[in-house]
Amino acid sequence: MIIAPSLLAADFSRLAKEVHRVNRSGADWLHLDIMDGHFVPNISFGPAVVRTLRPLSKLFFDAHLMCSKPEILLEPFARAGASQINIHVELGEHVTALIWKIKSLGKRVGLAINPPTAIGLAQPYLEQIDALLIMTVQPGFGGQSFIYETLPKIQQAQAWRVEKGLAYNIGVDGGVDFKTAPECAHAGADTFISGTTLFGQRNLGAAVRKMRKLVEARKLEATPQPSTVANE
Ligand code: DX5
Ligand code: ZN
Image 1 (cartoon, rainbow, N blue to C red):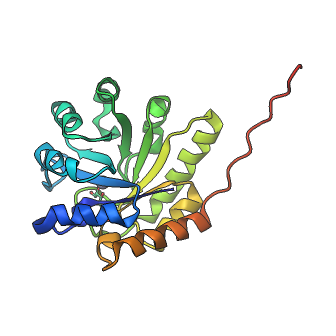
Image 2 (image 1 turned 60 degrees about the vertical axis):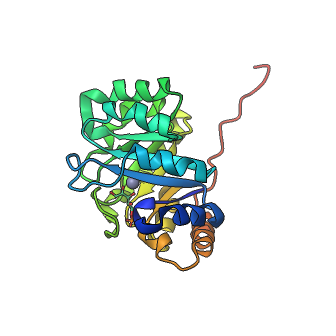
């Protein structure tokens, strides 16, 4: 189970201190929301900020590119220290080339999918990705309410993972709180991106521990693998 605070909800006037707070919290990943003012109607921060934060943390940096032209940003974010780069499936014909470019940069590949987009659009890429990021709000802003209609997509992603014997992470992003995170875990999610809820607590470490405990309690049991019969 991966708990990933989203830096978007941090206090930007003291970003270095916020990163240290995440370091001490016991979180697994730091989620970095990159918005270009075109793919989404908001702008966040770019590679220079990520490069500045990189020496402050040993955490896995999960960059989420909500950008119309990620091809111009892949190298800068790889060089800035992203561990994984998520691009959006809504980019259609460009997705395959983007996936291979991220791989060639030696980074893990994530594929994000917006609430109105059919999960079937992600299916052709499942063998090539390390993580599927199911958006549970319309991307662009923190602090929105979880969209429950996205739960069947988590279940489908989990069913495909078992059926195809794949190991991609299933992440949920947006409106993930102490109530919705366990519901997502029960549907098959294993990666929980949470901004407002986690950063909103005075004690971030306690919030991370609480979310981890709740999702562990509701996670799906490991699916038994078919046993292979030797000397058949
Ligand atoms: C939404 C971003 C999310 C956001 C989540 O566009 O992709 O990562 O930071 O924030 P909360 O947890 O506040 O919904
Ligand atoms: Zn995000």
